[in-house]
Image (cartoon, rainbow, N blue to C red; front, side, top):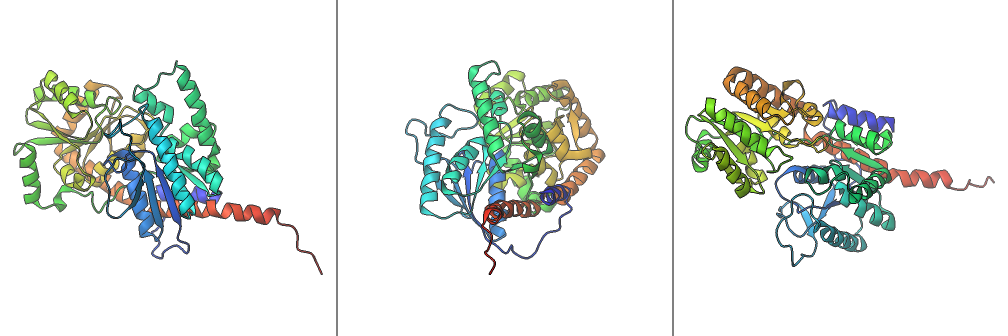
Length: 435
């Protein structure tokens, strides 16, 4: 057990060298993804890149997910039946997700009854609950990929309040799911602390597996065709010579979207040549109206959803990147995309942001519009510092957050899960009679 803990620690510090040979065993993996995969943001990117690195290592991966979402040609994606009264895409907490998850459980059961799988890799708490019930039924080991507290996310989405009875019930359910998992991947050390400190999970069952980034795709602006960048800039309406702040991710209150728009209101008065490229969804019309009310509609460009494949080129338009996420428990994978793109990055001061950015990030006081605006203005004005920070963040991403290392950690965890039943059988096997 200690060996696996050490492997996880070394991998997160960039100390494990990439193995060239394929693993001796190829696993048939069923990933349970209780979301509308693929949707070009957050946990979807983690699911995508984990599946792809496992396939590169020689494993078979099937992803079972909700009805909606974008199909990808290189992945085996199996979808649930549709809900007639809820056709559009769901982001965040919703009462309709109860039906979605029931259908997901039924689809997972169907797949397990028809095909043989070695491991169930469950994402998010809903996926873990489905996997734990059905994995026990079919005697298939389950790995839980933890990406933040279920109840805290619901509070962030204003779906729960701590004072309500549903919160207490869901908190107990979350604790049971966490404690039932034999191995839990966490995307940050902060998440590990949440599991041990708030939910009483045993530390030896937790494997730190930080979010990673494809540094071949997400790369500095200098590696792109200048004509292609200029064409995209013109198509988006970014004036020639303007300095650009980029944001890529969901638009939401807990993501700090209102704080960023208010910060732009302050920056506009002193930096009239600075534009914010706001790349994400949902609620584009809502936040565009907020921008208009603040008087920054001429300085904020809303692109709507940007496909994951197109994100590197869009980020290459930026001079500075920003991530004003307020949540203290969720991961922040967008930071890694910024880092790989060699973008100097400003984030609200949270444990996850500090874990990813290290000593080379710029941190604003969490929740403070004034602090966010001041940090943005300082970094925009100091181009030499911005360049140094961007280069160092790129180096940090390459050295510590490559998906290949993460893939090896995942396979090590599968090995451990699959070997456990055989070790238990050996331990209870009757002694061989002596002749």
